[in-house]
Figure 1 (cartoon, rainbow, N blue to C red):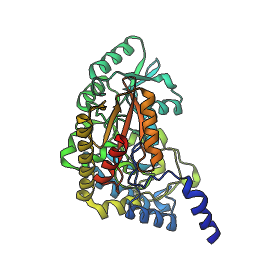
Figure 2: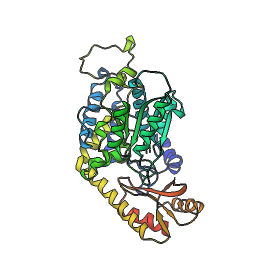
Figure 3: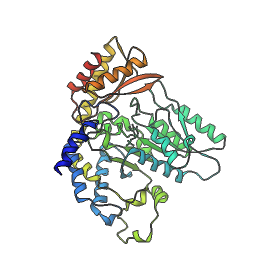
Length: 397
Ligand SMILES: Cc1ncc(COP(=O)(O)O)c(C=O)c1O
């Protein structure tokens, strides 16, 4: 074991990207908080497989308890049923599969919708379910990268007129590039009119709704058929843990329940067998790390960190706005700031490379309105104002 550990330090650590480093400001952060690590460690130690309620009652029960707390904290109505998936991509694939089950019967190709800023996992859900990539229609966005509801309504009308069958729309609360929030109330009204499934992808920004001043993020989400939020993004839970909610669990059951004889069990009808609601049979005890995180930080503790991160982002956005050499490319409603150096795309990519090579911060990029944007995303538990200022000084240097 000492040789293995020595090799871990010598060979593995130098080749890691240090996602736990406070200067990690690329992508959306995921931080492994102490309580989260302890929960993960204990889950590996006791190692239950929660395939059925009876194969580990604590696993299934704790999943319901923790997702019940989180549901209350982000302000979703009590009728939402929650379960844990590994990632938001898997959760969204299950949402789209349920939407297909719930679709009105009829002839014609199934069509779904999301904004052109939606995460690629929506398109991938179409691929995985055999609907094809072109089953997704990408709806244009407004000047602040939010889906335009009038364009959605128009696309649905066109598809119906052409004999296609609209069945699902995904609204994003916190898009990957700029953290823009689609107008969920207007999209919910259009989905209700058309009789199609509404899925809300709140993988990143859903966590912000824990702080009362950010409740607006999920305004209208109570009308959704399903929603996903990732505690492994902005809630200090080690990857992987994605919370999936649906107000129509019976449609998930109809889609995925298939019980061979060796898995039949005679327990109480109240006992939930999570294998009936999705593809996997085996289930890791992920709820344990979430229980540790939610209990040790509490609602106020998590809200305080989210509040701090958003305040650093606001301060950085103001510095960028005041600097003659840089310009901001999108609003910064949460903890991500998209901006560019007033030069060529190549200058911006080189600048990111220089900052990353310094080891002081790690940044990524996106493309907005055809231009390369530097994307600085705050979200690590260990990141302080000083780390953000250091990244800014490195960018300016
Ligand atoms: C808005 C959004 N949805 C979904 C995902 C996919 O998340 P996961 O890695 O959990 O599949 C991401 C990833 O960054 C995202 O930004």
